[in-house]
View 1 (tube, rainbow, N blue to C red):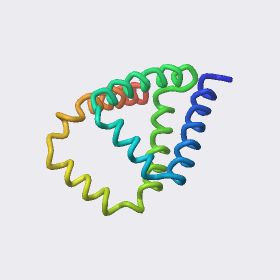
View 2 (cartoon, helix red, strand yellow):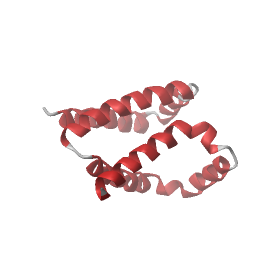
View 3 (cartoon, helix red, strand yellow):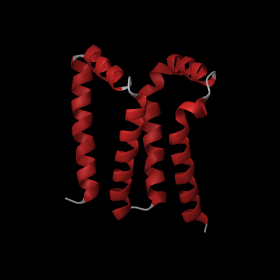
View 4 (cartoon, one colour):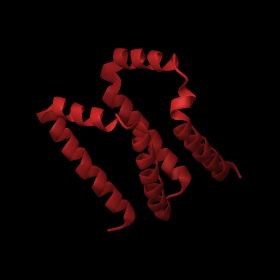
Length: 125
């Protein structure tokens, strides 16, 4: 298996487990998620490290531009999945907008800016 095939298999396994778990016991899944997010700094650091590792393997076979194209697909699929919760998402977004977003999301924002600049550089330079 190639690195991308291994990453795809990991996502498939995690997704199937999550779907089964959520369908069988949504409250238990939510309890698990809530417990995880009680440590937001740890989640941020672990996610960043795992993201960097996945990106490293993706770049063996894909360009950053191709990865961004896949991110667009992912964004659209997320919208398909959560569109039924439009009212709740809008309320949540309004709540977040009242806070200092950069203070809580600075690391992710910086990573996104770097990735966007990198993709733009590859596209236009």
